[in-house]
Amino acid sequence: MKLASVLFVLVIASALATLGVLIAGLVTMARGSANRPELAKTSNKLMWWRVRLQMLTLAFLLLWALASGRLW
Image (tube, rainbow, N blue to C red; front, side, top):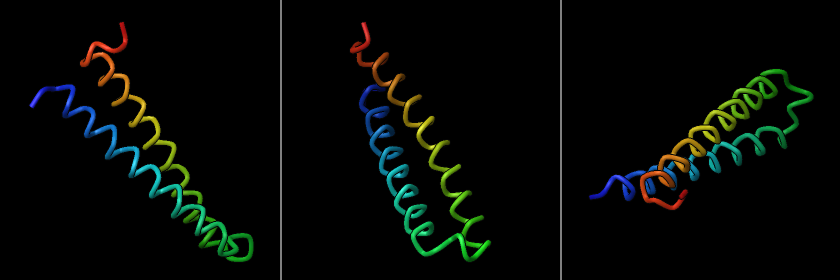
């Protein structure tokens, strides 16, 4: 398997993980986190994880573009 293929799989996996955390955070927020502080804390943690996963996805995307020669 080529490096570009592995990186593409990592891009897809991290993007799906980001989507999953985003949906989990939105569901937690929709439950009424304003009334329950523990839900607000959980929602905040999930949104921070979303930001981290987005950064990881962008890094994998850049590496994939470099490895596959699509950037130049």
